[in-house]
Length: 176
Picture 1 (cartoon, helix red, strand yellow):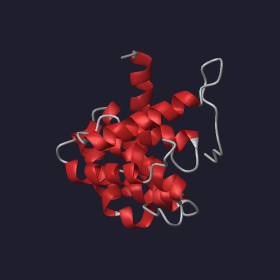
Picture 2: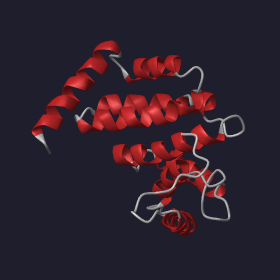
Picture 3: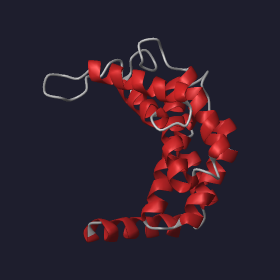
Picture 4: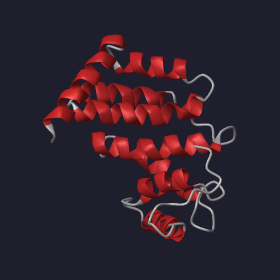
């Protein structure tokens, strides 16, 4: 690990904890800031979980995870905001796996099933949106379920099909 990164990560996380001494307080703070786009709460929480893990604060990471899962009724909104719900769900899968895959197995399994069931025939998600498709593909890639791993492979094939000549991904209909 780069010592400069470690120092910067610790300083930033200390500032977060100063304003939000618990995971619940941080989820409250994020939710308050996301009133216009509540479906992004899961995405923001996933980033906070990863930040807590990067400085070895597992207690705080568990508090964040438990709070965002408890609030899923407020941010999991596939009928109202498919795009941000998908991105939040996909981001949370990998964050929960990094935190404690066994502990969150049932939640991860439900999230992966929802992601796999929302894939389009082309292999993409959300009418060929690149970022949500990449996020969902990553969330399904290491699933213990063969059907979900195959969905991830369809996502990989679709993403490869969008590569531009210089190797970057094309963006299709992306509102992210």
